[in-house]
Length: 220
Image 1 (cartoon, rainbow, N blue to C red):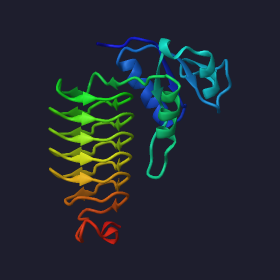
Image 2 (cartoon, rainbow, N blue to C red):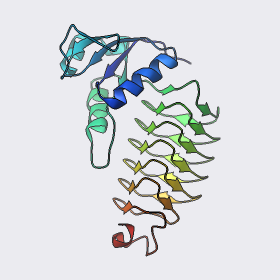
Image 3 (tube, one colour):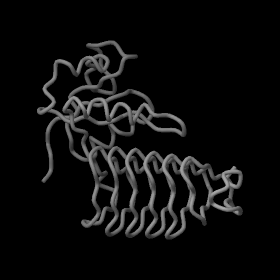
Image 4 (tube, rainbow, N blue to C red):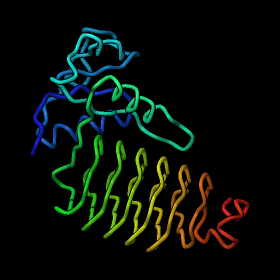
């Protein structure tokens, strides 16, 4: 069932612009933005500025949903921390799909998932909390994607890929079928991953992972 509660956007940076556009494209109403760098009572991209996150103290969590406008880069945790902190206070995060994304009805999208324009999500995919599938990314059948993952624009996951929590997959990267990516792994832009990656490992380049998947020196 569609949730039509009004939305409050968190953040006013580059990803927040895209998240606001996503919300509008999906027909959702955004009633305010929380960003400490903006003055309360002003206007940002046509949305009233409520103040910093403290403005949420005066809002009933049951009457709104939040949109996480904080982006994610390798090594950053603010997006995840915000989701967890405000979730513990009873706020829910909207799961939003762009109308120009293709999402199979059997796909399961958890709380706060954002699916941007041009994404393709195929049958029996599962996506965890607060995960971002950015513009034009593609996730094929039976992939399991953990919480707090960022799949950057144009990245491709072939079938039955298992992505641990907190993984960053760079723009244009390709993960071949059946690969497992450990929690917190980082895949550089344009990288093709052909072997499993252990937790916290990094893969960069067109032909990575020529060494054992347990030897992190092989992932640089």
